[in-house]
Length: 123
Image (cartoon, rainbow, N blue to C red; front, side):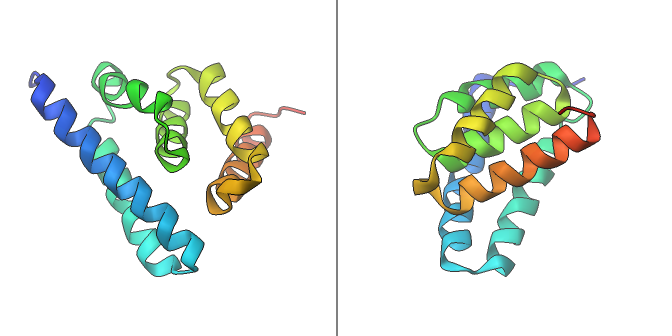
């Protein structure tokens, strides 16, 4: 597979960061159409590397530490789906769910955790 350079990683991270922040703004404004477009954009970026957990890790793991809740949400969801840092991703989602100040992010984290637990038979 093609080697990914640090500059490319940073550019991809920046695109995810910008999209995730804008997603949160749109979701909080009630503009689900634009929020869905931004979510699809993030998914498309990640899915382009779906067969390479190492690259996904290089891109997403640093984003789990972001100060922006929407960025942590995006990173946690995709690392969880890829089986990378599962316990850390679940903790981040749980923390986001508990933070009602993040409104749309909190509700999305709740929904993702509920679905994940259901699909993985957790109680």
